[in-house]
Structures are given as structure tokens and as C-alpha cells.
Image (tube, rainbow, N blue to C red; front, side):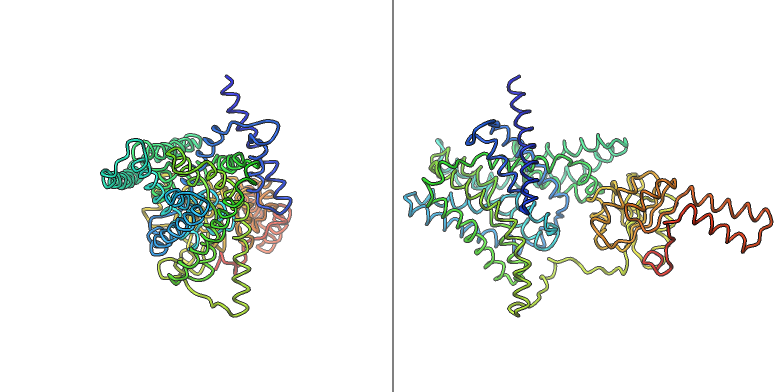
Length: 579
């Protein structure tokens, strides 16, 4: 029972403290990450009052990393990773080498061995998955060429770190033997290749069929449970059977699931706990900060912070520029990687247990992690103003990314997102296509989704009230949103769509007039109510039966329209929808 109480108290205290201090940081125009780190320090062992259970906080944080990487994988297709291999692979290798060299030189000057310095430098070289994806997502850069390069770069770093984690016990463990080095390395690479193969088979053949069966039940809770179970199961399996990190396994699973028709729905419906547990990662880092050790090891800590904030990004900047990428991309990638996180601590803990790293190495990593996590969002937000200033001064010229790393130009003149594919939705999609407007359908019925996919009509499976689903449907490049389904939360869809695309034109369907009013207040320009349209049709029919003239019928219809639809205006002939 005490163990259960510790778990509940740690989870509650971490989330409550993170909420309060995150809101405070936001009010002070700071990143909420600053508040999360302060929350961890507040409930940690180095401040008076309540002390959270550090081991449990770390487990919650690991769960957040798994869910976060699964979500990143859902959006990150294999072609995106292959497209950036020309810069991500050499860039990551060069940055790891530079960090290892800097770490070795600095630590050797402080009396460490060269081996300890190199391992310390490798630990510094690995960026934080949580910080990188959060900063990119907050700046809407995760699904851009910059985001693809940064994530691909991070994956290469993770793979290299996994190899190091395998090699260290073989070289410095109690049963280490130099004769088995080649065998150990070969076995590690074989396990990684097997992980990719197994994940590909499971993701391409087994998971879509499993998700299809669950989605057919119509239960959102079961679908959420199914995807969470798949993400956690593949992540844990990658660690237990293949010796890889759980984060890497989750990323690979998400990347393959994301290519199925369930990718968008999995991202929106099945990861409700992702952000909450990702927050606990920052809380767990804040708990590690021991202020009493800062003054004692200030030279090592200052050098570590310098390598993380100056040495690493400078090496990345030089490599990206040498590979002939635009300065804006080079600066963004370099700054995004100017931090350290979860893998750094895992590697340091293993090296410390093997007697390679001294105890002060962990303290230096914690302080560098806290400082870099706080500073990183500010540095990234400063990239755009710096590039703009350099452009105005004529120091740089606009450059297009190399072929294959950018996004293909949109060949469609207009695009409309259509919610629902019943009789109304099907009719509107036909009219849109006849007028050279590409419709993208959002539909919850999985059988309808598969039928539309087979007919090559763009379709996204999921609830249109979710921003993730709207983003998958291309709402940012759409001119119109047509809500044709009757049993949907139309007002929520309108609000979410306008928050993502303020200038969007929205035409919506409402079953009742009271629903139409709520949709107009949410921002829909034109709302058509079934109740009102029936009143208009019956009015015209009754007057015609009573012998009224066409002019009288039109006049009465207009009066009824004003009474029922006063704030509602029909679609203008020259609007994008009717183009």
C-alpha cells in the first residue's frame, strides 16, 4: 500500500506542480518547459517539503518518451528519412566526433583519462528526443525539411549511442575480452536489422488487420487501447529481444503504422496521455538538479554547457553548410540539436557503473541539460529574425532545398476538406472535382475509408474535431471546409479548423436551427439546416398548391428565410467552393 501511495503522490505532485509553474512561466512569456523543470526541482530531494519518488518519476518519463516517439513515427514516413540521409548521416557522425573530441580534451585537462573524456563527449553529443520534437512542433517545423533533417539526425545519433551501449560492457565489463569485440558489434548490428525487419512485417501486415478489426467495433476506447498496447508492446519488445532502445522501437512502429489508413486516427485518438507523460520527463530532469554541487565543479559544468550550446551547434552548422543547404535550414538544425537529454543520462549511468566516468560527470550533464532545455526554445525562435536580418542586409540569398528534401509544389489550384461521405458529401465531392477542386474526405467509417482509398479519392480516417486529423487532411493548404455529416460535433470542427487556418471558408450542415446558431458563433460563414430547408421547401409547395404566383412564392420564401436564417448567407457564386 505505501508503494501505491508513493506512485499516486508522485504522479499527482508532478502534474500539479508542472501545471501551476507551467502556467506561471507562460504568463511571464517563458517556455512552459522552464516551469516543468522548476516543478521537478521543487518536488525533488534537494528542496524542503514533499519529495517525489525519483525512480517512479523516471518510469513515467520513459513512458512519455515512448509515446512521443511513436507519435513522431506516425508522421514520419520512410521516404522522409531516406530523403535526408545525405545530410543526417554525415552530419550526425561529424557532430558526434566533434563532441567526443571536445569532451575528451576538456575532461583530460581536468585530470580524467582519455577514455572517460571520449565517453563523456559521446554522451554530450546526443540530443533529447522530447526537447527536439517539442521545440519543432511548437514552431510548426516538425513536418518541414528542417524538421525531417533534425529528426533523421537524431535517429542516427540514437543508433550510434545504442552501439556504444552494447560495446561498453563488452570492452570494460567484468567479463570483457577484446577478442569478442567484432562478434559483439556484429551481433548488435544484426539485432538492429532484425528489429527493423520484424517491425516492418508487424506494421505492414499484422497491425493494420488488428486495427481494422478493432475499428470495426465502433468503440473509440478499444481503438485507443489497441494503439497504446501496440506502441508499448513493440517498444518493450525491441528492448527485451533486440537490445535496442524502447524509444527507437516505438518510432519504427509508429513510422510503419503511419503509412496505413489508421495513422491519422492513431495520432489523434490513441495518444491522449502522450503530452502529460512527456511533461513528466522534464519534471524528472528537474528533480536531478543538486544546487550544492554546482559551485564545486564549476569548471567542468561551464565547459559542458559551452560544448552543448556552442561546440555542438557550431559543428552542425558547418557540416550542413558544407553540404550546401540554406543558411536558414543550417541554423535551425544546429540550434534544435543544441541540448542533451535522456540518452545522455543512460550512457552516463552505464559508464559510471563500469567505473569509466567519475560521479561529477552526471552532475555536469544534469546542469547542462537543464540550462540547454531552458535556452533552446529561445534560441530556436531567434533563428527566423536573424535570417530575416541577414537577408535584408544582403548577406544571404534565398536558396531552394536540394531536390527530394523539400515538399512538392501543390499542383492543385484549390483544395477543399469534406467531412463525411454520405449522399451529401459524395455529391459535393463530385461537383468539386468537376470544377478542378481537389476534395480530401475525412470519414470515421473504416469501410467507407477503404472504398474511397481504393477509388483513389484522398481520404483520412478519424474525427474531424481533432486538429491532428485536420492537419493530416491538409487544412493548412485548403481554401474551404465542407461539413456534410449530420452526426458530428460541427461547432468543435469549425473552431479547430479556424484556429489552424483563420482565413478558411467554412460551409456547414446542421440538423436543427439551434445547432446552426452554434456553428455560426464558432465562425462558419454558411450553415444549412435540414430543419430550415424543409420549412422553405414546404412553404414553396403549399403556396404553389394555393395558386400563388412565382413572385409571391419567392417573396414568402425570402420572408421565411429571414426569420429562420437571418445570420446565415448562402455560398456566393464566386467563392472557392463554387468556383
